Length: 445
Length: 165
Image 1 (tube, chains in turn red, orange):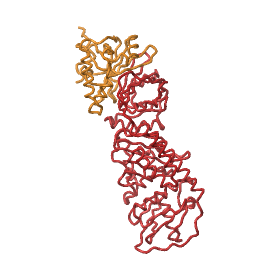
Image 2 (cartoon, rainbow over the protein chains, first blue to last red):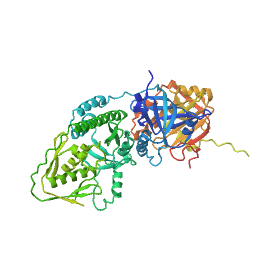
Image 3 (cartoon, rainbow over the protein chains, first blue to last red):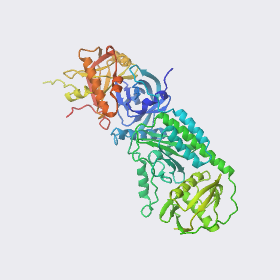
Image 4 (cartoon, each protein chain N blue to C red):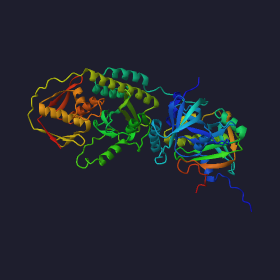
């Protein structure tokens, strides 16, 4: 039986660098050390094209190449016989390798030297084990298939979005031993991702945002591809992107409207995985670790599968909610609370909301909150349904398929974190109540 | 008056080639299919005109077959801690068994390579296992370097080797 590339993926992590031989048309061999060998599928690998060197000249003239890769634990070597097929200079494979190379570059002190010009894709014709001494492989820490099965069953049992997201992060901790995790949802209209759940940080960071295309998370979302980096890297630090976006905002000079993104200050391993529901990108599942090489190809496969199920479940929950929502009860006047009035300020420019001087939220969630409060103050309403909000022209929902539940969840969490006198309480599937404990005074700014 | 050609490998390079650094040997058969194998030590002749690299005949069977056929070889020496990399090419490669003293060179090389990699997080046992080979299986490939390049990653990679100053 011939070996396939998926059987030796651990050799491609770059712990022991791979070496490559090419030959010019006159038969002169050339040997090079490789900074990156990327698994593409069982019959293909991709190598980073960083410089126009002899290797490059050779494969353009003679597509045959040989590779030696080494298992970093057993030191088993494999010789691969390759044939060059094509070079990709954009798209998921390229972006994934570019992000990974940035990690490798900063780990090896080569930042500023390593720059990905292309991803050279090769067909693997054969993989031969090189005879030699090896070390025994220790047993794995955990069985990822078993972990995935357990998580899959737990996710299937979740009946609402809040529980589903919390359960996903709990599963990652308990079954995969991953301590630092977050889930971000995509806002198509503003091309930004916003954090809806996190685990393992001092501050939850719920409501914090990152632009599409920025950092590991933003690039994974833009390309809809998993991105896994096994060493610390400066180039893909996403917190910097957030600071820059703050600096560019005309708001920032007067008012602090940015919620800091949660995250380790110096993660050494990062993995961002797209959450796809139906055929749409819904968001990103992001995990990180202070340890080098924490996430393997197998972890990536497991988390991609988990995120796939998460996406489908979000999609199904939303469809079920749409189908089962009841119409609103007749308007009934709520009892007005007593006490010191709370000033709620709304800035129409970006739908940002301030409770007194404290920034709460902006965007669609801000617009929803303002609409709820206006109905509350004008008509005394406290009972609402998701369906009516989805159809309400005052709320600028990007489109009807927008994940309204995620916005409400975000708004609800921000109110709890602010210990605000206003809360959102679920009263049934697709229904909720606005609980107001202090008189509110609305100010349109 | 004609001046004798200086060897391509100067004294500084000779020291570099013979210290504990990674060695990889490439060859190419007459069908233009390249192949390669890990080397396990290097001996530079006192006049620095020939270089011998050692490898396991079993691991390097494809390399040996190609080299016996056409004598063409390419060897890369790379220091993991500094990324300093040198590539030598030869066209007159001869395959031979070990000479007296070669086993000691190989033993010292393995120890030095393990010491080089220890600070990078690789254990001694790992490196010794990677380079392990029955003594009878070791052969030497001796060639006259006819081309030498610096291959340290960066804009100057691929430039002809210049003497260390």
